[in-house]
Length: 168
Length: 175
Image (cartoon, rainbow over all chains, first blue to last red; front, side, top):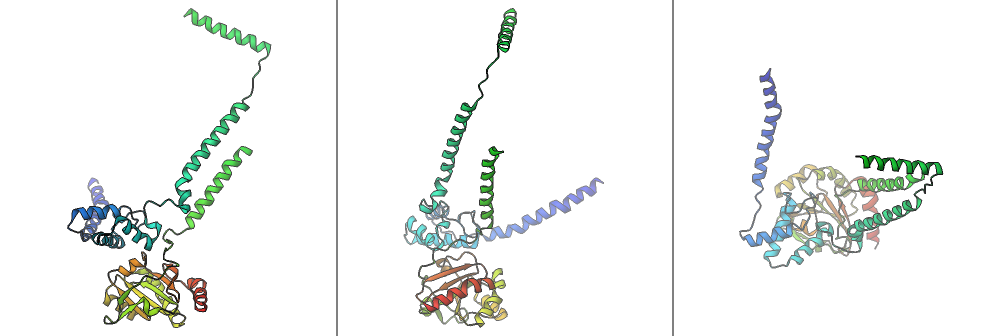
C-alpha cells in the first residue's frame, strides 16, 4: 500500500519535475550572451539596459530578459557606448525606433500628466470628500432633547453609580 | 436609495475603464516611425547574395515592406494571404528576411510561394532594429517620398487588406 503511494508520488510528481529541470538546463546554458571583456563597460551597459523595456516580454527590462530582441538590443547598447555615444544618445536611439514605450520610466510630458499626477488628483479628491462628509455629519447629528421625567431618571442613575463607586 | 447612487456611478465608471482596457492589445505599441522617413538600409538579397537592395531602389513609388522569417509561426499564417495579394499586383512588396538563415529563408519561399519582388537579407537583425521591429510579422506602407505611413503589427488578414491597406495605397498613389 505505502509502496504504491510512494511509487505514484515519484512517477507523477518527482519524475516530471526532474525532467522539467533537466530539459530547462541546456536552454540556460545556451544563453551566454557575448559579454564584453571590460567589466566597467558591462556595468554601464546593464545600467542603461535596466531603463529599457523589452518589447517582446513587456514587463521585463532588456537587462532581465532572455528574449532574442533583448539580447540584440543589449548588444546595440554595448556597441554604441563603445563608439563613445553618451547615455542620452543611446536612450534617444531606442526611443526613435520603439517610442516612449521602450522607457521603463515614462517621461513627464503633456500626454503623461494624467499618469504621473492622476494618483495625487485622487488623493486630493478623496481628502476633499472626506472633509465634506465629516462636516455634513457633524451638522446633521440629531439634537436629542430629554423630557423632564427622563432628566430626573438620568440624575438618579448617575447618583446611584457614583454612590456605588464611593462604597467600594 | 440615493446614497448608493454615487458608489454605483463610480463602480460603473471603473467597470467601463477596465472593460476598455481589456480590449486594448498591449502588444500593439504605436510606432514612432509613422510619418517619418524610412530608415536607410542596404542589404544583400536573400536569393542572390551578389545583389543588394536599398530603400533608395524603391524611391518614387508606394511600396510595402513585410518583415518575415522562416522561424516565425504567424508568418506562415499570413503568407497565403500575402501570396494572393501579390498576385493582384497592386503594390510591390519587399520582404525583410529578419534574423534568419539564407538557406532556411530560401527553402521557405520555395515551399510556400514567394510574394516578394525582392527579399532583403537581415541576418543580424540590424535593419530590423532600425525599423523598430519587435514582433514578426510586421508590415510597413511607404509612400512615394519614402515616408512610412502605416505599420501593421502581426499577421495581415483579408480584413486588414480591404479595410486598411487598399484604401491607403489608393490614396497614396493618387497623391
